[in-house]
Length: 174
Image 1 (cartoon, helix red, strand yellow):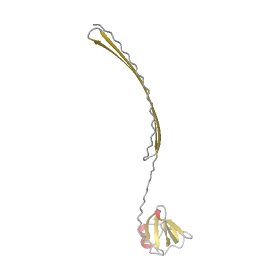
Image 2 (image 1 turned 90 degrees about the vertical axis):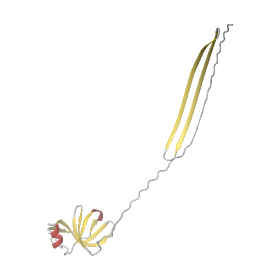
Image 3 (image 1 turned 180 degrees about the vertical axis):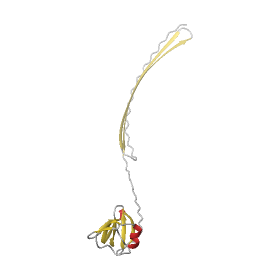
């Protein structure tokens, strides 16, 4: 028996997908995505059947896909800063005579007011040269001083150290 058969098949498909989604999370961003895919395939098969039979198969397929996605992300960022400051009670008080060394200058005077940021001195002098520092604290003798008129404000943040001044305050520039 001799037979000949031919089979031809064609399949065409089109698929369109549109997706829209919304997502809420942490952060801020907007994204839009478009995805297009096209595929074409041809399958040819040849088979021999017992006897003289030939089968030929042809399948053609086309898929077109479109996906559109929109993502909107909304978020809130919170930053918290905590500053802790521990401040000891000052040993200075109004009426005390003090020798103050700051990062740049030295002063001697009478404390008239204390605030969180400032020490106010009256009867004050700028100490240009203390001489031997230990001797100056012991004897009250300063090598070079300049009287400063009025109230002197000394920034507490610039103070390196404070010493009790047990002597008379300088009254003249020398």
